[in-house]
Amino acid sequence: MKIISINKLCIFAVIYSLLTIFSPPEYCQAENTPSGFNIYIPDHSNGNCITHSEYNNRLLSLNRFTVNNNNNYLFPLFIWPIQNAIDNRLVLVNYVDDDPAVGIIKDYNGLPHSYDGHNGTDITLLNFRDMDEGMKIYAAAPGIVWDVVYSNYDRNMGGPGLPPANYVFIKHADNTFAYYFHVRKNSTTVSIGDNVTAGQVIALAGSSGNSSDAHLHFEPGQFVSNQWQKRDPWHGTFNTAVTLWQNQAPYVGDDGLKVYDLGVFTQLSCGGNINSIPSALFKERLTQPVNFGYYEPQIGVFMQIQSKAGEPYTLEVRKPDNTLWASTNGTFNKTQYGWYYWYWNFNINPPVYGTWYVRVLKNNVELKRTNFQVALLSRYSPRFKPVAGKSFRRKNFIQRDTLRVEKFGASLPITYTLLNPPSNVTLVNDSIVTIGTNWNQPNVSNYFRVEARMGNISSDMRDTFYYHMVDTTLNPTGLQNIQSGIPANYQLSQNYPNPFNPVTNIKFAILRTGFVKLEIFDASGKTVQTLVNENLSAGNYKIGFEGTGLASGIYFYRIETAEFSDVKKMVLVK
Image 1 (cartoon, rainbow, N blue to C red):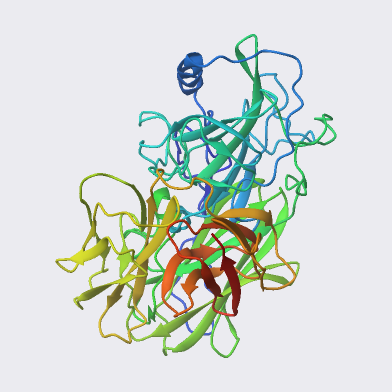
Image 2 (image 1 turned 180 degrees about the vertical axis):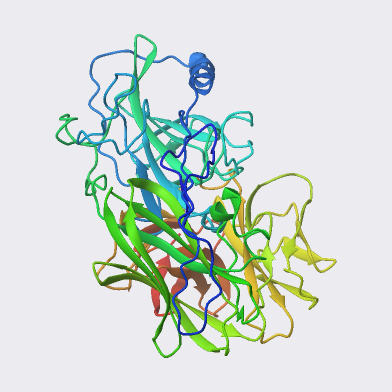
């Protein structure tokens, strides 16, 4: 077993040291259970995700504003500031450290689910691939955008030495503030001076600045005598101040074992040396083979978890007939966020082809399972690399982006296809995305995708690149998540007001995460405007539609998902 245990999100470095090798690998017959390696690699990193220099620079930049110091720090109540809920491809890695003493860590319940001196709440994506797909950050309360930085590099995996973080800093009506740190490069959808509402998308999550993983650092606070003073929004046994959350999420600091991700990998997909895998490959999520080849020298299994200390686990690899091929068990140390992996020699005789599976159990209860196909030879889908998603901002010149794909030795050609592109986006020379100057998108944010497919048109070997286009000259409100969580069912509500002139609002509910399209049509069936064309999490949403430039009359709006479709009528009266 190897452990890459990243218990601190915002760190200076990841230092590896090999502590113990329990047993050498064995060549195993088909019915044997191999012992494999059991190796522990700890994380000795420390530091703050917001460095002191970044704090100082930000405070100096705010000197151009007048900050009213008073004692009326009531703070607004905050909604959840990111697209998904905890444990839905998000891990709450660090709470605020509420004990000012150096070397003592106490979160709001007096436990050490944080690191020394941490001032905010770290909400972490599972990997950089999820970051590339786009995880929205919402304004947690209404206010005025006080400061924005958006142009810095955002794939940090270590610590300082790179450009500072991108962030959005929002001032509330009572002169308190909240900032949203480490956001994705070019993804901010607001500008200094904008009024924002709770639930408004303000950026996408990233890993800019001193940040080891893709995450949002959310920190409320106020200025006291022109000095920044944090405010822990969580209420508990140690921080007894009233909660600042409209609906405070349950505490995770003493939760049992949670398995967020589980997969198999080959010697090739882990970089060539299965005994020493760079942590960056886990953060990018290890490539999974479409077929796992019988001739592979080893099979690797990785697991991404959060766990309190002493949690038992059993890991099993089973053949198509459900018979056990390999297993290992043990207990985990306290792990706020980390990857573990195991491997065994694989070249079994005789070969057993078909659908195998690997699963994790705790006290004989299955927590997670993943299937994999064993075939004669390994094969892999193409993979966009080094990134699989970008944000572009409106420019007065043509922008180009060259698609790059890793093929893992395959010689088959790659075909690229634009999916739902706006009219100013074209694909030239087969692999260059060109973004023109005619930005006709309806809202600040617009999303489209590019698919890379290896082989023939029916091939299952494919990958997706996610583009986010930002035009801050447009309506800053756009799509708003007005209530996170899972609604009772899908719904498309009647617009309000109706009749309208010229602005109306449309609400809808999404039961399951997936791609959503919301379009406006005139009476002849011609598309007037596409309001939503992107992947959304389950939740309740609102978006505005402005009929300026349209003639009076009857219009229709239609929503489409993989599981739901509905159409309603509205009337524009001028």
